[in-house]
Amino acid sequence: MTMFFPRAPRLLAAVLALSIALPAAAIDVLPFKDRAEEQRFQNLARQLRCLVCQNESLADSSADLAKDLRAEVFEQMRQGKTDAEIKRYLTDRYSDFVLYNPPVRGGTLLLWVGPFIVLVIGGIAVATIVRRRAAVARTGAPTTTTPDPAGDDWT
Image (tube, rainbow, N blue to C red; front, side, top):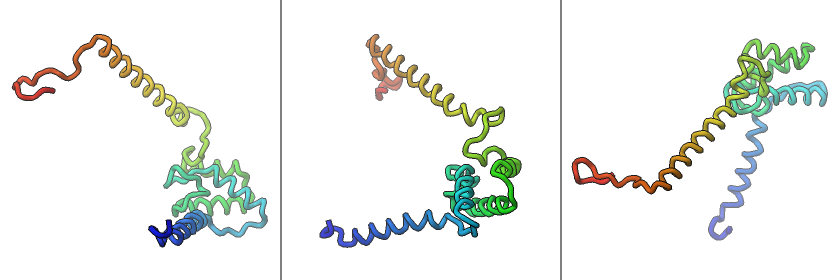
């Protein structure tokens, strides 16, 4: 392999180094009192959604807003607030969307049920298409052999 790609080992090493360094860059260096406080912070940050990235947790995001929210969560932890109080503060400010697992209630019902509704609609659409094609195949009806009114093209 090195005969055809002499730089492959170096390139692979660089890619691996970057893949390790990039997630580390997303983590803020915060002055935790002890390991328990750090674990509590990381657990809480994993339960919160980055409002910019939307598909990443607050712990994984490198967006500027995520950094600010992590600092806010850390500051509130230092003020002695519980996890529930911190979540309530963030949901009051940013709505239930900031939570990775929003509570089931009227405003979030579509978030919980929506994917299943889309799946059912898709299943019905596929079943309808398959039945129509099977019916056409049984009757032996031609599918696309009608002449064009101009007489030149077949569609």
